[in-house]
Image (cartoon, rainbow, N blue to C red):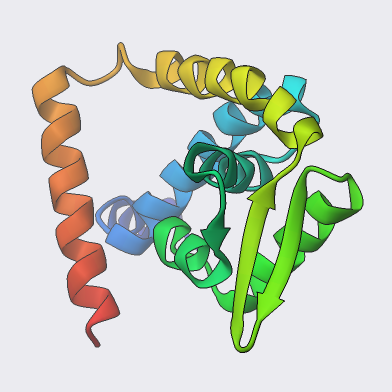
Length: 148
């Protein structure tokens, strides 16, 4: 493959929404992993625990909808949090409810500090207006893509 052909392909990748968002997600993932390291949890586990603690309990289905995760992924995250005694789980018919535990509640401040560290890791890159616009555009994409 010659240099001109390679250069053309790179340009196509840089203008590809899928490639750009995947690359961005990996970069954000690294920042998030570092920010949540002090919780002893992955960012996904910490955010799930945050929601349980914040609400004083929540339906498992609602967690999936809020975090935009599949039911199987939510189940896997919950099982790890249960093994660490960070959430309780109660079934009522087809509904599964998650509740906070004293151990899980004790992590809430650390989770909030991690959340703030994550935000600080990228807040100086975009202006407040650009951040709002980016979130709006991302929301529009998600809404349209989920509708398909």
